[in-house]
Length: 230
Image 1: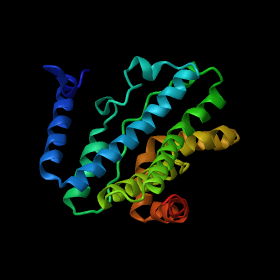
Image 2 (image 1 turned 30 degrees about the vertical axis):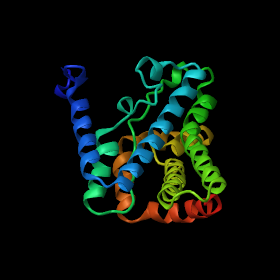
Image 3 (image 1 turned 60 degrees about the vertical axis):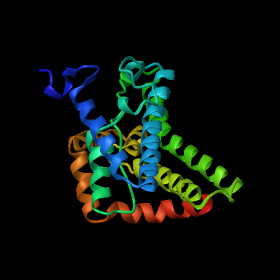
Image 4 (image 1 turned 60 degrees about the horizontal axis):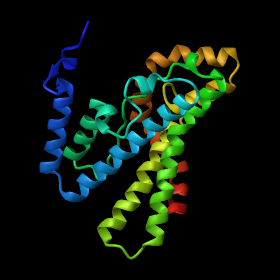
């Protein structure tokens, strides 16, 4: 069955028009600093997913390429919940920090040249892309430290959000990237356990987030890395 949201209305699907409308709303109502932060966040999560797709393609799986996901065009990657509504809710609640995610890039492990080892490469590609972006922001910030305060603040945000995204995605709870890496090194029973809990992974993440589990991890691991780069 075809979703009503996938029906075309002119050039774009209905869901894409909704996303465009919300982005226009962001552009109209947000002050420039928050709008710039949103742009950096979207670029970070799009780059993360693109990295997954590029490495999968180089390892033999063209699924992402066939679905038009090997692009920096945000429209190919934006997830209505994680890329639009969550940041919107954070803005409306007055949160000084933006966070989100993109649609996961599809990977058919059976198409990979060396499924077990290549899946680790694909999984690590996303976090490594964010770490690379953080390093780039850091180099620019430290090389041109006399730039306008607003530029320096945005560079600092680029460092922070990319490190947070990298560390968060490496937490080994399915379907996050860390679970794909862990899966490679677990015995059969451990892999079976991850397979069993994956359908409930999102709910597990929400529950742990409610009890500030991720805040503890992010503070413990992210902050020392961020302090080195700032």
